[in-house]
Every structure is written in C-alpha cells, then in structure tokens.
Image (cartoon, rainbow, N blue to C red; front, side, top):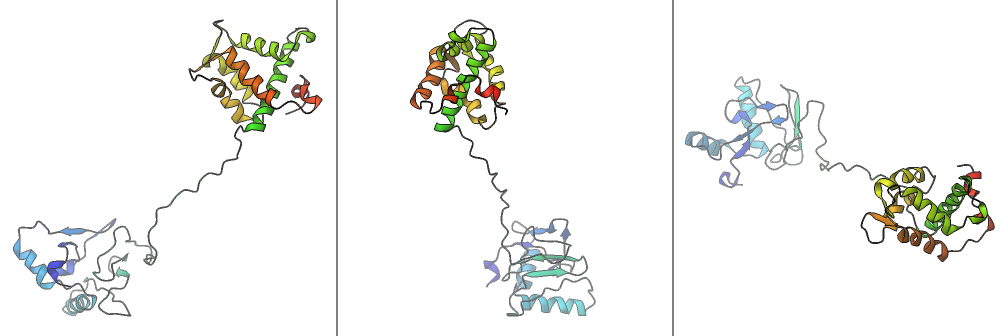
Amino acid sequence: MRPEHLSLQLLAWIYLINGNPIVQKGGLEVLDITDSNDLSVRQRFEEVIRLDCASQRRKALKRKTDGDARIYIPTCSPKNSLLYDKVQCYDVSIYCWCVDELSGEPKLGSSTTRGKPKCEETPTTTVAPKRVRRNNRCKEKKRTRFLRRLVSTLKSEMIMSGINATKVSRDSAIRWKFNQLNINHNNVLERSEWKPFKSVLLEWKNVRQCSRNLFKTCDLNKDRKLTFDEWRKCIVQEINRVPAKRPDQLNPFLYILRSE
C-alpha cells in the first residue's frame, strides 16, 4: 500500500513526531494534516509512515532502545506480523483500544481504561424491547357485551332515579341518559359534556378500550359532536345484530348486583 493512497487524516501516534501519544478522555485524538501548508510536516509523514505493524513496531522498539521510555509500541497479530493485533494497549496511560488490523487506525469510541475492549464484536445499536400490550381492543363480541351492559346500566339508573319500572325501556333509557348529559339542552352532546360520563365508564373492568372510544365510534360524521340519532344508532344497531341469548342479559340490575 503506497503512502499517497492513504488518508492524510491520521490518528496521531505521536511517536511519528515526538514519541508521546495524544490521549483524551474519549480516546486518541485525531491529527488532521490534510490541509496543512507545512510541507516539512507532510513530507516527514510521507517519509516515515509505513503502516504495517512490523515496520511501526521495529521503529518504536528502536526509539525505546535509544532511551524513549514513553514510546507506544504496537502489538502485531500473532498470525501475520504485518497486521496489527485487534486490541492495542499503551502501558504508560493504561489505555486500550480497538484498531483496524491493516492500518492500525484506532476505532472511534473503543478506548477504555478498564481492561481490554471486546474488539471481535461489532457494535450494535441497543434497541429497547417492545412493550407487550394486552389485546384489549373493543372487538365485535366484546363491544356487543359492553353496549348491552351499558343499556342495562342506563335502565337501572333510570329506575333508581324514581321512574316507574314499567315505563323503562331500552329506547327510553337511551333518551333519558342523552337528555341528562346534554347540559346546555342544544340536542347535541359535546366532548365537555361527555367527559364526566366517560370517566365513569373507564372504571368498568376489562372494557377500557370500549369505554375510551365510545364517543369517537358513535360520532359517525366525525364532527366531534354526538346527536341523539348517532347515540341511539350506535347502541341499538349493534345490540340488535347480536340478540341476547340468556334472560339474565336483559336484567337491568345485573351489573349493579354483580360485584366488580
């Protein structure tokens, strides 16, 4: 590999200049001489830089023999002396880091002072495990049970308010609750009027998704308001599609007498 084919933006192994590696908290610092106008510096690099491990180790050992005790001495691969060992350490500062086997260039972010890094492993981005959510969507059968329970509850409230039970029916209970929620008497339920009732429905167990989305699913024209026709159609049409199979499903006090 010819020097002119190598990037002149090199990690500063200072033994090529003054024998002292530059070490920062995040690892070895980069010495960028790409745009350097100092020809002597560029020529010096081009003259001395042979990046194979054997050449660099030989030069470093000579410097150490000449009295430079702080010189960094690269470790070569036991299989091929021209290649660098994947883990390099500088004993003076107790730094170790991962390098490219061919060029010896340190891999950014791999330096550590706590033992040797695991250079065999390819760094991967840690992905947080997806949160497993219970499948509690308001599906067809679940929604039908929820609406049937809603009608029974409305009937129970109507009877408990003092209205004669003989006058309580599904349609009358739906109308009664609509009028009760329609505080401003404009024949349209707005979200602010719906919110207190929604809070009550959200306390029902195992049907939270149905309770949360009832207003939205009943709002057929998506105008963020609920007319009586939308309210009634949303409930009745669904219940009529799946008729009650047991007498106790028609009992208006069923969900009051049964503990949560």
